[in-house]
Length: 149
Image 1 (cartoon, one colour):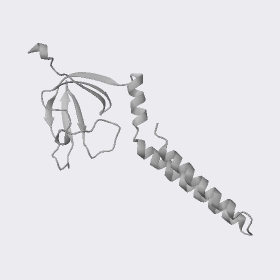
Image 2 (tube, one colour; image 1 turned 90 degrees about the vertical axis):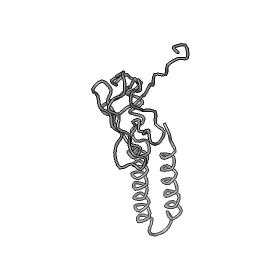
Image 3 (cartoon, one colour; image 1 turned 90 degrees about the horizontal axis):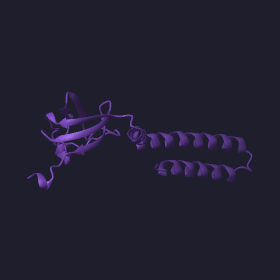
Image 4 (cartoon, one colour; image 1 turned 135 degrees about the vertical axis):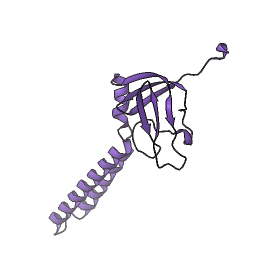
């Protein structure tokens, strides 16, 4: 787990509390306390939102993979339609009747490395995919051994 966003949030809250405590002895301490607590709340909510956005559901996807709460399919890639280098459409392919679609431009915990940007998927490639819904969590590509030649 990456703690950096939460540590930043906590440091922001501590900074606000220190500023409020410096003003504590003034006549307006209640106002400073309420404003400080309001800022702490805002920092926490925004920081937590950044944390959730920062992880993109990766911990949940990794846990599903570890727990075996995924489907697995193995076969040859067919109906492969690559995404153009400039984007503006999804790359998609089918393995044994199951269609997958993804893009470099979508933020998700799933595989999204398109062939136009160096991804491994190609027409006719033999793959084993571990996936959940349309989210590819693990790709294994079959590579023929030198002994087979």
